[in-house]
Length: 121
Image 1: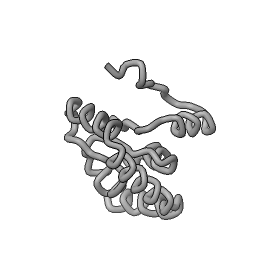
Image 2: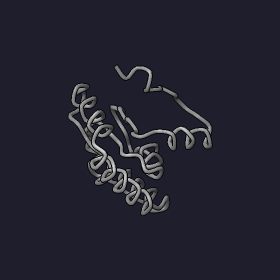
Image 3: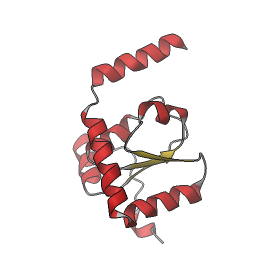
Image 4: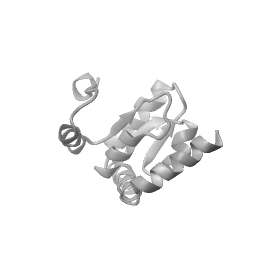
């Protein structure tokens, strides 16, 4: 019964994207494949906890600020989202972790890590 509170927005201009982030409480990241997930990092920089599928890339790239649920488990995804929205203490913990993690991200370091991964594969 959250249909009126969830919006699928697609690509948005930079400033509009951050306005959406700032007006949100949680970022739902249902990607099935990611090489990095820049949009998740952008959401974290706006103090949004992220709910995502448990992809290997997410475990490596986002050790904090992201709640991972089993891949394809929509029920677990919904349950964790509701839990974040109802549990202020949990929301605050993940919001803080997300922001701290994003605050320490550096595009040059991210680019170097991605280049290294490409060289290895």
